Image (tube, rainbow, N blue to C red):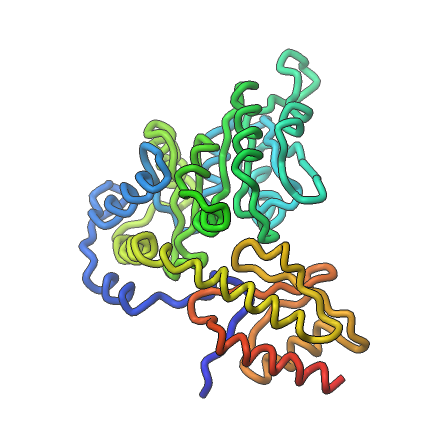
Length: 345
């Protein structure tokens, strides 16, 4: 049986053989008591790579983001965030439900947050009619695969700091963003007080994210992690994969970016399909079909019947994501099947 080709996301990656061996051999303890040596090693490595004092291993990126909001704010506060950001759009309204905060939303066409947006949405601190603005939530890379230039990110963060706000960065794919910007992830993380990044998105670890920031903040976040049910015990078996992810898999992300561009060019070779090459900054390819009879349901079923898993359309576009295991040979196979589907219409 042929291996399934899965283009839905870079979260579908399988742990590498090195990770499986590392899991088997991991030295473990009880992380709630702070004595799992493999967890401690991963957290120290993550903090060092982000240029922060400390880090906390959490089960998911959503928990990392929500822990940050919960620790930075008190109920009734307001956070500034992008309307299409993961925190707002893809985390089930958790910030309102868990932390009791309101949202001041930025809705720019390119989904960036600029310094003037921060200043515009800052509530007057001495007016009892308004909630207290407390936190700016930035994101890089963005959910749509775009990457915020470092100067824009820095300016937004500085505007927040000048106003007395804390800054959190959803850096789920921060290593992809760093590669696209030609910089170190640490320089992106410097634009925020706290940063979350995933080892399970594109880095092949099966589970986990890291929340990084000042030592006292991470201590409080650890308490909140326990409250949310995120305190894990012998989690070193998972952290072992995270260490391999950071030490090894961050160094191969350029392959995913190159393959995304190869995929975009291949899609553009098909009459009636347009992939915006300028939008391919990381490992995401968004494309639009203008072909009579092309329909999401039939398209998904046709590809599935040939061992290819994809999402349906996102508004007017489709998204393919490259990751470990999606090489040029696989992409050629996908393009062949896509042409077959179009021929069948």
